Picture 1 (cartoon, rainbow, N blue to C red):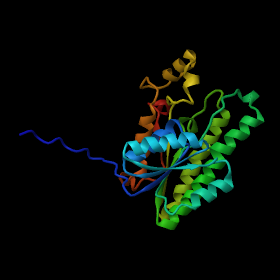
Picture 2: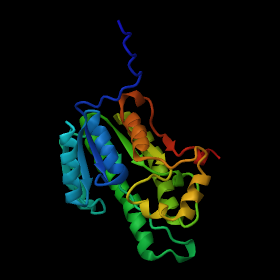
Picture 3: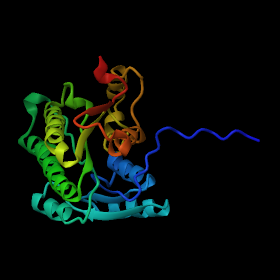
Picture 4: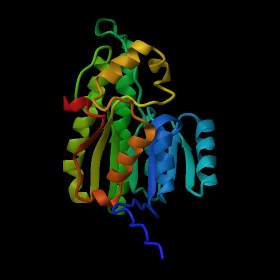
Amino acid sequence: MSTPRPRAALEVDLTDRVALVTGAGRGIGRACARGLAACGAEVVAMSRTAAELDQLVAEIEREGGRATALPCDVTDRAAVRTAIEGLDRLDILVNNAGINRPQPFLEVTDDALDLMLDLNVRAAFVVAQSAARVMVRGGGGAIVNMTSQMGRVGAPLRTVYCATKHALEGLTRAMAVELAPQGVRVNAVAPTFVETPLTRTFFADDAFRQWVLARIPQGRIASADEVVGAVLFLASPAASLITGTSLAVDGGWTAQ
């Protein structure tokens, strides 16, 4: 008789939970939506592009999961508040939508500055606020803000991006302190550079790829699934006493 294999000590079971993911149409957001659905959550997928959401929902349903598309531009504050605060229930938020426009500091344009402040800070704040209102109404929940290793350090061509991600790291801590008595946990995941459709053009430049690899002690670029693992942990009951922290998924970049 064979000996049964021991089960993992940590299994993420999100059955009967409702999870909202912004920026769910592609990249890290898409991977998070699929990961949450695979763990049993009912996923509400939000992004601007309805076609991408429809493809994602169909993919999740083929895999036996549950998902709903919620097309919305997260920079439209009124639309965001209506869409999110109209949900009957919300247990998990992955506040993921964001953008970067690398430019030298002395040449940063007003358009790039406004774009990143609007999406990475203002929209993230409004999404988190609306989601927290629903969670408090329902007795609690878990929010995971997607920040970046650039929310802890600086880098050339990324002054605005770094500023926005530092802001989101601070927002995470302040929200955690204020919302803890109401049963809402707030944490962040701070990835290094991740292979996604958004970064593919960056990594096509071999000099840039080598610059990144030289700064990651583990010597490789992150995959979206490695970021998902951190998100699932922080959203799960296994992290029930964790709030106000930021989990780096950076291969050691910020440890130096």
